[in-house]
Image (cartoon, rainbow, N blue to C red; front, side, top):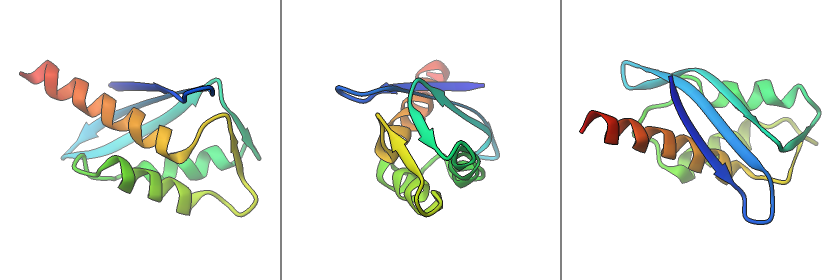
Length: 99
């Protein structure tokens, strides 16, 4: 299980956990002390990251999250970019562990 975190400056903590299988993210979980309305939008966010290549950039990850969030959904205290950063940090930690 890979784990990455990012605290939005002046905002909330985002944590992302996932497993890498065949160079793709699986079993993605997004947690933290952020607020999300409606709660069901969390399924949209995690679903947007399932199956994504480990080569995806922070910007690409953030765009996937942004597109997947249902109309009217609000991520308070954080951002799609923070989620992208947390994922890339987890992947970077994996690279360091393998070195």
